[in-house]
Structures are given as C-alpha cells and as structure tokens.
Image (cartoon, rainbow, N blue to C red; front, side, top):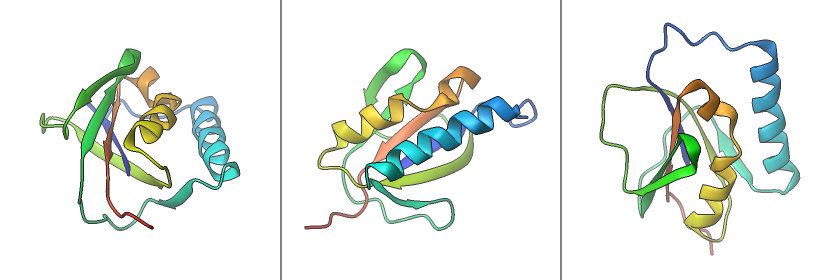
Length: 109
C-alpha cells in the first residue's frame, strides 16, 4: 500500500498537468496489472514499511511525523516491498514536497 502525504493541504490545488501526471502514473501501474485498489478503505497493516521522500530517499519504517495530511492511497500487487518502492518513486507527489509511505498489507499466495 502506498500512502500519500502532504505537509500543507491549504496549498494543495493541483494543476490540470499534475492531475494528468498522477492519472498517467496510475494507468501505468494498471497496465502492468499491479493496481489492486485505490482510495477508500484502509487495509490492516501486517508487515514491513518504508517511506519514500523527495529525491528518492528511502527510509525504513512507517512515517512518524504527524504534521502531515493523508491525501490518499493506492494498493499495488508486487512480489517485494522494494518493487513497490520503485513504483512509488515514479509518483509526481514529490514535486509538491509530499512523501509516500509504503506498507506491506495483504499477502496473496
């Protein structure tokens, strides 16, 4: 699960280009048949977690600074959490100063 966070919601008025960029990112995941879910209900957190910040800085563990706003999430199907990290790195949210937390949620065998 990729959890999207932004520091300030008041400044968050995405341009049509930014919206288009995010839709293209989602379409790319869907085209690879890796998009499992997006948006509505939060899934139980079962495994490891990583956080991707601007400039592709990846840290272990869930994000702990609460001064940020959850702005959505996407669930992707990947073999490893590192594969999910690579998908997250392509998201345009970093241009807005946001970050993405990657959590392992449901394992399908």
